Length: 308
Length: 267
Image (cartoon, rainbow over the protein chains, first blue to last red):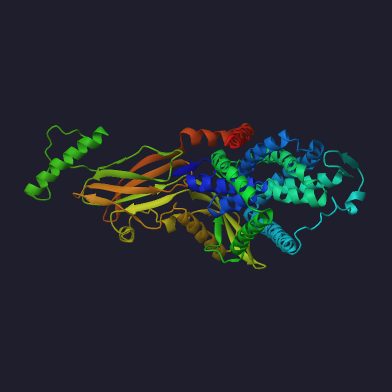
């Protein structure tokens, strides 16, 4: 069954889009991060213009994070103060990101930048996850009763000025760090159409040293507002948000997420992370091949401008 | 429409008479309106479209519009469909440090969004006989698009070729010349294919009657192409009031996400 997407200006199979949404939802349910970083490249693979894929995906991220935030808010797993500090950077970063996006689109380089950023990011994260899950797996096989490490270690970052106390996270760190992190995630969010949870979550754990329990809730808090900002700015400056596309992805996600969380409960975390890293690396490899392979045609068209 | 019905009836009668009595016979003149003259100075060419417009709805997957009509034989029919003109920018990829990225660009003005030709005989043969001047093959039409800025002729030709290539891939410049089917020597029909990614605007469908390579009659029909219904509303909203559309998109996602989360926890 085909449906016409009014902003992408093309028709697309409904079930392909629902399936993509379900796959993203599955990942969201399994790992607690939005599936945007996989859904956006997949949308591009099926032929949605990258600019529309990114902007509509940001729209979908809102729905994803609000349903996750509901749960974590109720459990009290949101460090509001940390969330707001992150958001400060996130709002500035995402606004700058949309501006950069618009500029790159005008000079005809947005597709290339999106592909390159995805390759770099996905392969880095995929490799990190793969080595981490492999080493954990091997360690556990050798020594199943390995002792827990320290809560977190102290680096140079703890000596920066503007220190703030984050009670819920049991942290006393410089506000510059979460602001900077939020800024970077905001840029990623705007250019790649992702919530950025897959970067934000590890960064919050390993870089800021936040306790795992509050990480997902807090990151979803920041992602919700950043994604809303990106959606609004993309709609006003580029007009590339396709709500029909976003709604189909959201519907698919609603189906996929509970399946994902049920799977996550059954499989051990190491196996899950291992599987996910393989999936991420596969998408990165496909994007890289697209960049390296001689294209069927070197030509493409920019935006059509109807003369006044 | 009435004129067409009358003409069709007349043609049937005429065809019947022709079979009985040979090729050049005067049609029965009794009761015929003056619009179908027995011996006309300008040969008649009557056309109509199966649809008055191309409506892009939520279920739109591209569409085929039928143009049909009647002409005074002898002659050949050529149909040209031209989409609204606009500026198009062609981007060209090159390998740079092993990666393919856009390194060149060239804009052209006056590029038709859509261009298709159909003919009742191979077009080259029709046009080679000195036909038209007005009827342009795609290649001739594309040679008239105006490049923005100046550039070496070879480069321009390369970009122009690229423009045609991309449009062809999108089904906007059908590669093959369409077939105008002629029946009973004077009724014709032709299917005009429109792909799913169709730019909006008023298209022009023009039918020509050619005799010995010369245009003896021409009829033009506007064919508006536009989104209708839900998709028209959304697209209009998005382009005229981006802020409101953006807020609407946010509210939609918030509600859908909240509802989805609520349902998920019940299961």
